[in-house]
Image 1: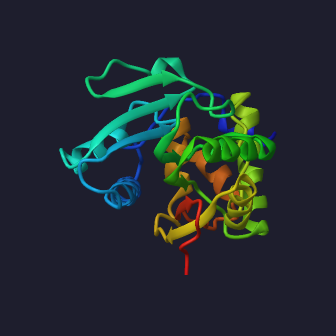
Image 2: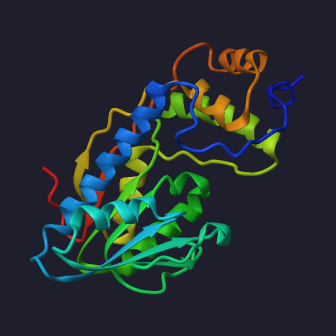
Length: 252
């Protein structure tokens, strides 16, 4: 029996805030706060009162955009947009524009601050380059682009992640993932014409991947043990650094 068969075929559609472990849940929320802080810091490099266009790619229900606007307040005149491929996540909002859009297609406008969180790994490596190209094409001359994704530390760990993801893909029948190493993301953005400006490390992981998958797929104790076996009872090791790109490198 395969791991996918032993785990079962139930997807409860879990989301952040539904972890088995409060520590894991808190870690993800803390990480989200650091992402918002980085975006706000980029906005504040502009003169107060400036009209700026902000976009969150794959921004779902607009949590990040709302937090950014709340943090900035009336300091800037910001047009905030959420682009997401899933029409079900789009909603009416008094200050945020929600538009159905596939990030693999050219963006409908230009933007001063672009945010792409946990987006790349849902796309093939070829598609990831296309998304990077589209980000660069839509970024204004003095703009800031942020790529934030879960990144394995090396090829060996990526192989382990892929083994688990392949099992999960067989279980669900879709949602294959493609994990890029940090240097690969930097190379893709460089090919698109953008340079790494800043890198903020993140202490999100190692965390309990078992907690995440148990919440996401409603795993039983036996199914979780099977997952432990595949992971050789070792924690999933990775990081979620905040990678900021501009047209001129400032990284030191």
